[in-house]
Length: 111
Length: 116
Image 1 (cartoon, rainbow over the protein chains, first blue to last red):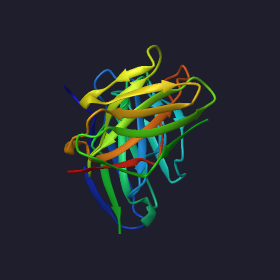
Image 2: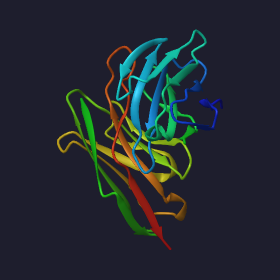
Image 3: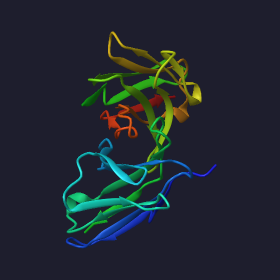
């Protein structure tokens, strides 16, 4: 069965650079979520989209933005990267919000 | 707003023994509750979920959990631990707001250690 696809799997950026993470949800899923998981931490909800509209917002920094496109894939844009942004970024998708399926994550390292 | 408290950041049990991972939640609206498992450097895999209906829910790998509204709890159990159960377990809560479910709020996680 198709799963949530995230790219890239690993990314190394320097401070103050910009990064773009991509997420391809499970086909026909209408909701996409983004989470950030720091080392040894629980996942923190960043933002979600339902039918291409932002539906919920968590602890997403102003330096970050996200959108969902007409084909339902989503991108998380991160600017002015800081060392503290180093984390595992997960995307999840769901149909009507009843069960979120997670991707394998993108490991971002800021040096 | 919702919150989740997982009691015990580390739980150690012997292989074959009962596994009990505790989760208490706080929610101002009827909650949807989930348990996820995470293996090292892996994504989150859903073990089981409670939305409505039967309060005892069964999941994958022999796990089950019971929703107890009066105790605001959703503890995860497995009758007999297996070495492959060693992982990080997260309890999570969300609410359905009509325009899609809100983002999950996770507990801090419980690291399950299985002793041979």
